[in-house]
Length: 477
Figure 1: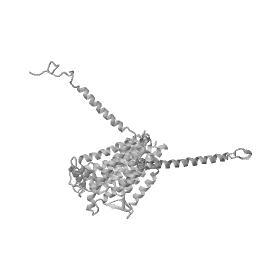
Figure 2: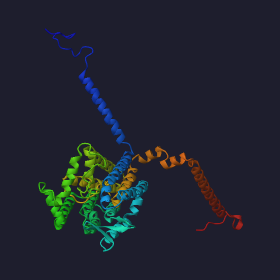
Figure 3: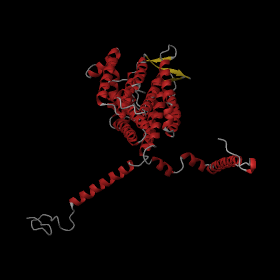
Figure 4: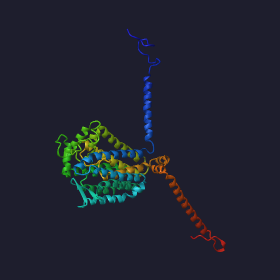
């Protein structure tokens, strides 16, 4: 015996009966809602200044996280060296205090200003790298001479070489394209390839394979955008792989590091110590980490915990969630940079935007991959997060250039004009100084117009001054 549903002869509910839900209609409404939400997000991404605000927001987030993590890790190193626990943190804050205004100035500059600095910046980079070779001028750490002492601060010229190669290479290829010389692949390589080789050789004299690799990435990014033939590009790629392999084999400690990376089951000593301890730090963090500042691996267990392996300390103190957030931020930076490179009409801006994006994102990927054990450690810092004054300054300037290029996207200038006055004018209006500034500007413009009108009247009177016979004087040829 069973109960029959109303309106059904066999005891089953009638799908067409009133009050019964329609699964297909509900599913359609759900899909429509998802499509509508995706449309909203796409409309946000299609706005002219989306790339600009993405680069700005990601930069501020990564910089803030970097300051926090440098204080958390460097305080231990400073205390063990008998220094103040805020010693390295103060240097990082100094870099941020100098770098942010430089980034703001770069974001407000035009591409022609960057191009004007192409050859001077390249000369500064070459001279700086040459100074590291002079005994007594170059500063050595851990057996490598990569720094020079400037006013009590250690400056790394190889970081400035990255920015110099970006600007010089993009300017060089843009000039050749305007002259119609890039139809021949040899003009794509000369003098770009010899200039890159000189920078790489000078950097390798300081035993810095990681920076050499990033310079080669910038070189390949420029050639890729300019449209180098596939056979030439593949040949260059094979040549660079052979050169990097030769540099690894030629140095005993690099070869041992590579052997330790290939032998993952070997003892966690010697060259494998850093990689093993980095994995321990990542694994001990769990999902949400042990807490900010509560990490234990930074107490002498993970070498270079403030620079090359700071991502391991992030994983220990902030957990898997923290590492995924950092990785997502670099992914967003890659999206914004490539979006800028695709949308800007200027060739120099397209070349420079691609090279900057490849430089920063590939450097972050190599650093993270070294910590998690995908590639051997090569001493590449994590952009905006690792401790390092030169790296922080150069990266902020490069990101400021990206923001400047984002203003060249279609519709960006109209969006900036419709945005209204900037924050500087708003601050002046709050202080009651905006009206005074406008009055002064009006007086200056009025004086300028009056002076221009007066000069025009004098010239007109001189041309029509009476000559012989009462006629206007003839004009001089």
